[in-house]
Length: 76
Image (tube, rainbow, N blue to C red; front, side, top):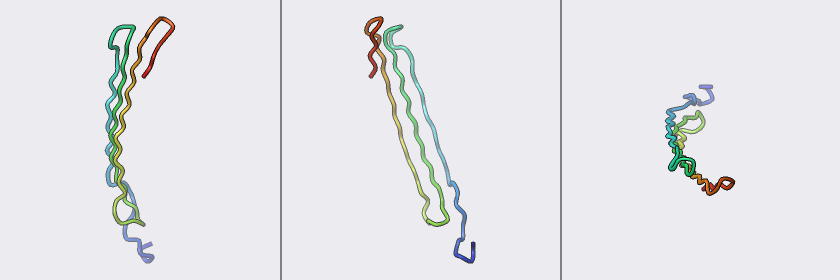
């Protein structure tokens, strides 16, 4: 491979992945909430591409639930 010009191997330079989940009742048997946040940062080196390939991603998810009546529930 060195004779063909390949001087380094590929691999991961770093991977950082962290997240937080939070949820619970707002009012007992009537209203609930849930939230999720995730942060990811990764850098990969490849033998065929000199600079590292980087990915940074931030994701947020939120949900609320409301029990309007015994047989009716609303989610947002």
